[in-house]
Image 1 (tube, rainbow, N blue to C red):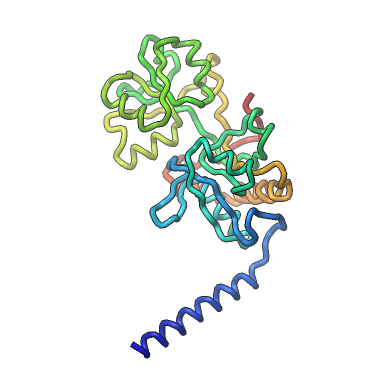
Image 2: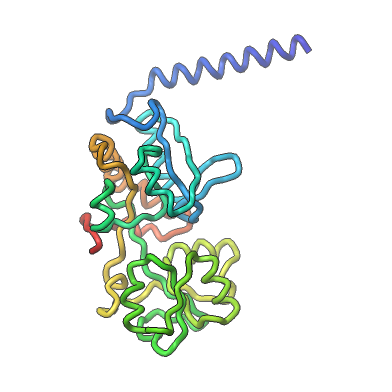
Amino acid sequence: MKVSSLCYSAVTAAVLLGTAAWAQDCKPAHEFKTVEAGKLTVAIYEYPPFSSVAAGGEIGGVDSDIAKAIAKANCLEVVPVSVDPAATIQYVISGKADIAVGDWYRTEERAKVLGLSYPTYLDQMGIYSKEGFSKVEDLMGKKVGTISGFLWVAELQTLLGDNLVLYPNPVALAQDLAAGRVDVGVDSYGTGVYAQKSGGYAGIQIKVAEPDDRVQASIQAAQAALLYSKDNPEFGAALDAGIQEMHGSGELAEILKSNGLDPSGADVGEPRLVK
């Protein structure tokens, strides 16, 4: 017992010394303030493959991998705060978190109250059907389900009227699509592909929507970003620089690929805001 305790203490001390040495040797790429010194507090909700939280608190998904890379480059420890989607943004605005992750779009309205990082990836409009539909025209005359809040919702409401059913989340849509209560689903292409690889959407084909002037999201996919406080421009500059470096090195495309998404989604083009 005594020998084991001594060995354990020695190992623990060595680990602590090694961690301390790393902390002293680590040189941050940028200087900026965070909610808690030495830590990057991340507001996150469950939305794979973009953001997820394991039982032990380890975060995963595309956005989380980007956040972890930013934290590593700046000698910060990642501290996740798991919240509901509706509360995620408020955690950043109220100063409880440094960034919000989870496939947040770069929109004009959002830019009024939040800092939006350099574009991270494109979130393409996907069409889910047994038939393999890929055109907006294929939706006409069908019962179509989609998720509230997406860019294509307003235009689909104009086109489809009462034939469009809105759902609060992808799970509810998937259940009704499987049960035949809707004929076609419209959701993020990446979300569906990830779910299908995990056994979801059996018998459903998921296609990227072909460009159609009636639905602008099919022509120009939304750019995603990490959200931060407008009161911390130094942090925003560090985020932008880090994300641009990840684009240039190919790291961001690899992150998409490792999370089951098409690496071409990293071809974001010039930064833009959705109206």
